[in-house]
Length: 56
Image (cartoon, rainbow, N blue to C red):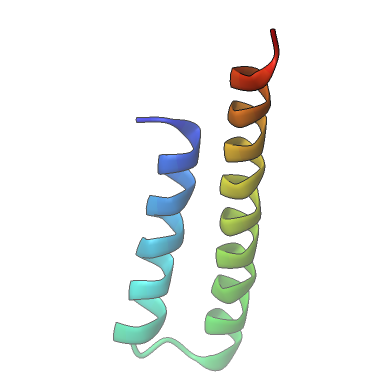
């Protein structure tokens, strides 16, 4: 599994927890921040992979 896939899975798992668990608002806010970080890291990993593929 690639780095990008790992971050996407993490993002998905956290989103699922936020919507299904009855966690308090502070926990949900913290988890939402983690989702944003995971999404950003996945995008960065994808960009780095694409750059490596396009370099001669």
